[in-house]
Length: 419
Ligand SMILES: NC(=[NH2+])NCCC[C@H]1O[C@@H](n2cnc3c(N)ncnc32)[C@H](O)[C@@H]1O
Image (tube, rainbow, N blue to C red; front, side, top):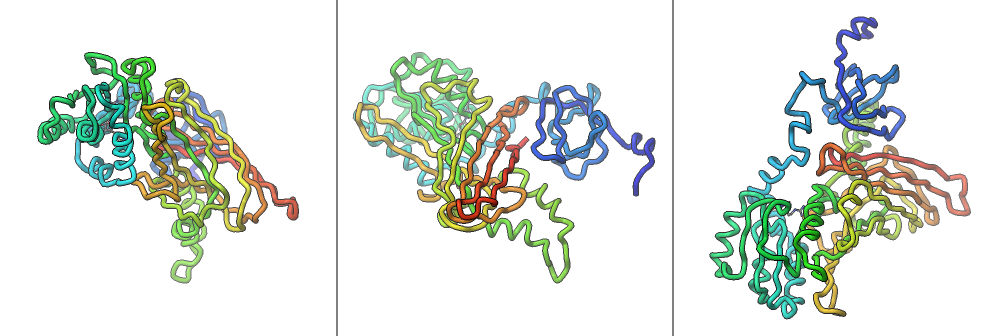
């Protein structure tokens, strides 16, 4: 039921954009921080239907704030842009620590790092940033003879970590400090800075920023940082079951045609990346490619605002290109020159981890043939307002192999993680 112009105006609400936004498809509006938008409808909690200077389109609801009198608690300048209350609140409970400790690939990789460097760790000073239950610090005390391990933990778990250190008889070696690594004071610099900071898609949560700040402040010149390097890996993939479950489902449920719901399904299920996706090696359509590589000795906090990478894939087998899957690998260089590097690879050809992989679904799948190429760029744009979040923008071009050159098409899509 179309409302008349003035009624429509009446039911609209004016919002102010909290930061810049670049629409990633024709039906999304682009706007700048401070723009006043007229919101006509709120079809979902994530995307609203709004107007700016006569143009109408979808806008991300998380970027909309009411003017001064509006919902203050939503306003990041009031609410903490790091959402630390929620973040450290979560880490104050056992759920996440149990998940991480139960992840054998992850935890045994760190144990292997300590074990293979145990001789070199003698008399060294170590900082364990974001120690959680203290597992890495306890490995240091159990498997090596460091002079001191400073186990830093901001959440309320720290008081239990202190008990675990005492319970295992390591309170002479491990000192637990409760507080944010950016704010605590160590009595001295350290020789080794170790942390398990990797989030989904490597960077989500942006705990890496805390590691870089601690590196610059507490790691002595010539000290070692673990992990020493990190790489984000991408691969074009099939995702038949996910596509069937979320999109094909609407073709003929119970003998009925529900396809008018497919645009909604695309918006609701394929707009954000799918965390905790498990990709089978056979779903990979090409050889994976490292799109972003980080050197933890030279990486700067400013570099985290926008990271770019390129990819060029040669399709190895014909199939349906549903999207891209991402995972990461981190490396731990040896304390002794020429010593063996330990690697933690969270990809489909390595042991399963609690990170699993991350799936980025295209709006529409594309059939591809062996010999086709998929080239393009990836941009990780850190959210200017919500500092633990980012947006992943992909641009790709598919070129048919020589025997079907006409199959050439380009696409682009931005995936918020999460705001
Ligand atoms: N790999 C991850 N994605 N998360 C696993 C490590 C996260 C642990 O580090 C703690 N933590 C995170 N950031 C900080 C910080 N800046 N200072 C102290 N502890 C922290 C957090 O409370 C949790 O116990």
